[in-house]
Image (tube, rainbow, N blue to C red; front, side, top):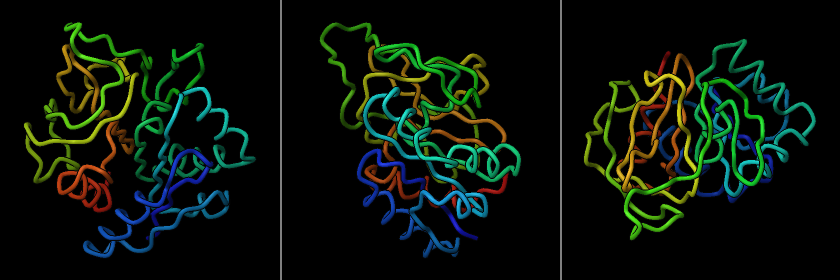
Length: 212
């Protein structure tokens, strides 16, 4: 089974590629490839969508790559292949994003990407650095991971889900900030698992072994 990391020129994919390759080798999950080839994406066993920067720019960059989104939709929505969105890749699962301007998302998980508004004025935005995960709902991706363990965040916006059942984990940053969302074969992580040391590697391994 091949895990595809989508390359649409959004951020440095090197660290994600290496982390996924390392854990795929450890758990026997097959090959990991970085690609923008629609045919390779359609045949993927799993799909990972990373993203860095602003929501509108990432969405525009993805849609500018002819056939990439359509191939991803065919594999994930029609084909039911496991999907993981990371950072902006998670945010694009939402119905809309409100960064700079209202921008349509995939609408795969209903919700709106809104600016973080901490209740404590001493807390700065962007939310940057390590924060403690609070697991709200059991999910196979959390096997061996507990509330209180740390993940690494760099973001100013987060996804507010329409259905609370789709909020799998959050962090406290003067308010509840979404950390993990999911439904069916879809998962999204606001933090960077590839930069979150042992916890992140465990989450990657769990995703690679997940059979929704």
